Amino acid sequence: MSSPLPIKIHQTLQIGTSRAAPGFDEDLPLALRDSVRGRPGANAAPQEENLWLSLAAHALWQRAGYQPDSAGPAAPVTPSGDSDALRPCPAQAEKALSLLLLDEYPQVRPEWLRLANAHRCRLPPRLLPGVLDLGTSQRPLRTLIEGVLGARGHWLAQQNPDWNWVGADSSDVQALWEDGNIEQRAQALRDMRGNDMRVGDMRVGDMRVGDPGAALLALQATWSSETPEHRATLLGCLSVGLSLADEAFLESALDDKRKEVRTVAQRLLAGLPGAQLARRMRERAMPLLRVERNGDTAHLLAEVPQERDKSMQRDGVGAGLYPAMGEKSGWLVDILAAVPPTHWSSTFDASPRTCLALAMASEFKHTLLLGWSSALQRSLQAGYDAGLHAWFTAFLDLYLKSTGIHTHMPRDFFSLFGTLPPDAADDLLRTLVEATPAAWMRAHSSLIDLLDDAAKNAKRNWPLALSKAVVGRIQAGCAANTLQSWSLSYTMATLALVLDPLGIEDYENGWPKDIPEFAQWEETVDKFLRTLRFRHDMYLPFQEHSA
Image (tube, helix red, strand yellow):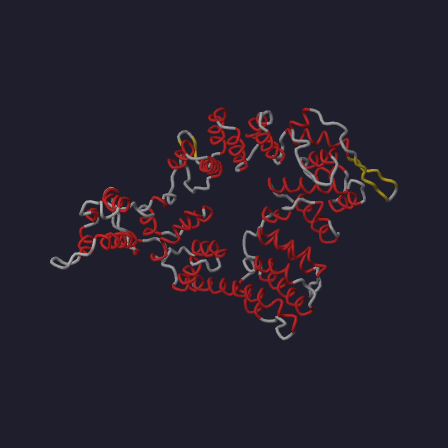
């Protein structure tokens, strides 16, 4: 962070050298002042030239690390790197980081930091300022950065107020909660709820950091004095560590005068297992859906609510907006979205695939699928079990086999891959990919879109076998000219960040570079391979360092 200009130089800039008193450079440090004025006895430079020299010298002095005397006593000398518990960063890994800080492959930065944390390496001294600036501008990276700062990095962070997020303790959280702007207070509340600060058993006043119940008490204490806009923002923070202990407060928020607050409370309660709102919605839904069987055939009969009373409005029925859908059908979507889909497979004594097949044959197909997929989305975000996994698998199968089915599901439905345990997500993707032909065609565009969403929400690299299977099918599709280059180009940029980089040799070989049609792919494939090669070369020094 730049310190302000010396007062006399600043005044001279404002009024001009012709009106300024002599000696405007006296605020400069002595050594710097002498270098600007020149040797004793030498011809004095014109005032204008002296002013510009003073400005340039001061700027260079700042960049070199000068701290004004008014900043307080000098900080203690940085500890020696030899006393650091972390190991030095490998030279090649340092080279990769320097490129990342120059905006080469910026999406790979989190992966580099995760590798350094995993191998207990500290950041190289020359790159500390750049990485600390990165943490200042990109909050999600801060925890990763703190893990690799080392003793020197922690010392350096104390020298710049912009880097005061390093080593933030409970008192910082308390100060932000009490005096920060709304964004800072919301983040402080999330920290108190979820212990993202990694500060262990610390307390914020009477509250323990990472204690959802204590954080709820803090919100309740200020609730009546919050503006409506702030109430909606702060209430949404309860999604971190959400439990039935929050239900009573959320139920009271259903009666708030502002729609924004009521909407947040409805959303949180609808995704809270065991909440009374889900029970009320289930009671409303039961008379509206039933299965009639006649021998070996079955039909799903659906009705829409005929009225919407105040209790239904309070629980969020009618809050959703569904284009090209009637008002009462929208009410049914809102009701179904608050009932876990496993309730229906149990009630109808049918598998999720059978339930979806029945829905597809219903005149309310759009309504049922949108309501059930929304309910699955909320349920999986609250927790994972085998029943929900079966519903997710059934929806994926229907999505891949039915044209236009994506219009019956929320736009962000496939972000659910991020809620699955990594092993379950990997197995599901491998099954989907291996069920396709060796060469993908335009008919597989739905699967390619699905893979793009899954990659964006992946928690780790995909297994090598899955990675090779995906690339091999893309290569074969290019050779057969059966893929749309413009649409797949975006997906390949995403895949380059999650495919296992150990398979780089396989990824680099096998492209049909000898056919004229490959020209449309060349730029996309080159960028794809360069990213994967960079990631591969980034991994090697860490692995060799730990061998």
